[in-house]
Amino acid sequence: MPGTLCEHCTAACCRYIALPIEKPETRADFDDIRWYLLHEHVSVFVEDGDWYIAFNTPCRHLQPDNRCGIYEARPRVCRAYSTDNCDYHSGDYGWEEHFAAPEHLDEYLLRNPPQQRASTRRKSSRGRPTPTAPRRAVAGHRVAHADRRGIPLPVLLQ
Ligand code: SF4
Ligand code: SF4
Image 1 (cartoon, protein in one colour):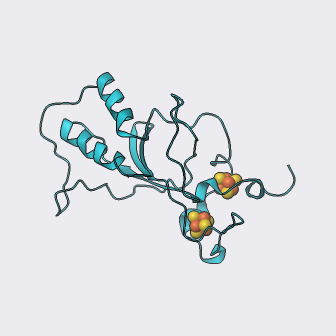
Image 2: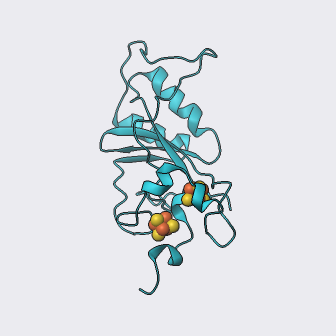
């Protein structure tokens, strides 16, 4: 393939961010996840047993030609990302679970009934659950057009 891989891509890795969240255990925890999924362009996935929330929205500095508008000043997570196993590649996305809508979570809970005890997760001052601080950057997670059941993912903002 002539040129760099990125020249043949529509900047899939610049069109979302994903952050780790605490693993839900109780019905209350899963109701918090449902709240996330009620929002447009938000999804939740599980990879290697870890839970993440993804915001499917492009970077402000992504240019119409799919190039970075602040290349020299791009964040470290962008600098560290490589094409070795990036979003451009097709194949297995590595998800154990992917929830793009509350209905996907309902289906998961039928298979995995939650615990009954009260949640021990931290709450914000507004009473809403707070995602954990990012343990690692996952800006390079792959983007699919449908989950493993063939259900379309939210349309990415252009
Ligand atoms: S790193 Fe991969 S996903 Fe990102 S722009 Fe380059 S080819 Fe596309
Ligand atoms: S700063 Fe540049 S490389 Fe990083 S996400 Fe935005 S457009 Fe992509």
